[in-house]
Length: 504
Image (cartoon, rainbow, N blue to C red; front, side):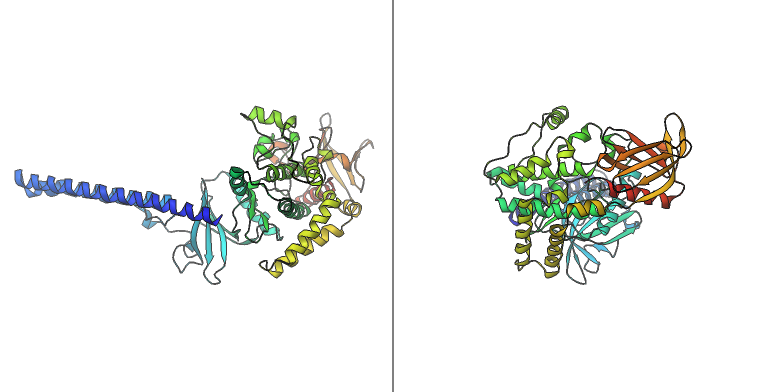
């Protein structure tokens, strides 16, 4: 990875050198041309004419030199000279992020660039610690994109897990958002797979298992915090030179789902290759959809390519819906292949949850081996070793039955329920350890939905419901139940209680 990085840097400098050579040649050519024009005008006409011609041409030379230098620096990741009129504009992040040694965070290397911002490897001036810095201009973003950005900061700050990129600090100045986070020095899993693909160098089984188990620990932490990642893919799995795996990029995460009324295209923002069959059938996103994406990542690590592809989107969808994929290679154990096959089950109910995975003997043995390897690794800091060991102990010592029952907090209250024939009517809503019971206050009739039949719980946008504080749940048959609360506090409490009761 470091060799590739050095070659990339060298190629960027070659581009920069070529641009500088072209710039120098252009300068000499134009200078000679202007000199001869001035001499000719002086001899044939007057010195004033030569001056009046030379001044605009010199202005063109200076402007060309500045524009060329800016283009060269932009391509090489070097600091750019200010454009005309930029001197009057102040940098909102001045003193916080920059190339000057007095900045709090000093730019060291451009890691990537997108439509709304860039990512840098930076050094904290006071401590010398290396971080990753994501800089985003929110001024020209849509409200939806600003929501993604805000959500990333919120989700990162809530997570405290050794296998998740840690949030350090954030700044917002003049529409510019700066997120300082943990830096993973080993690149990402997607690039690692691509590099191995060229020479067909398969991962060893223990390497596959260690990557997979660390992802499981990261996702379990996210799910236990009532969140879903929603964009799980190999490009978002970051690696370190110590062998630790870090899950990053929470831009599309949600504590709760978007509206049930929205199509998949607007409720899910992940990569199509990782979408589960039920999402293509317009079912709402769920933790079982996340388990499918985890299976796609595991398959990709094993086979060095994604399980499903196609010449166009229609063919990709058809292959996913009919599970058309190559079988897993026999160089790996049957236990590992079985785990991958279970996660890629077409029917979500046959996909194991994370806590169910942790009960499998093969996975438990792998977790114990991972724990020992981390504790014996002399390059992993002791606090990180302790965190991972505690996480492994927690999932190994948890009982699936106790966990399933403890996640449900019984709740009862009067809400308003919407039905197609009667509109909004008062309803007594009861949540217990087995089901959600809805009793019509006016008629006394009851309707019961078993918790195992629930597939989704989410808020409904006020613009769609034409009411505030509306939430909904959906069962396996696709039927949706809409409810309305009187205030935001009760609304949030019902969402949390029902979300926690969803089957994993």
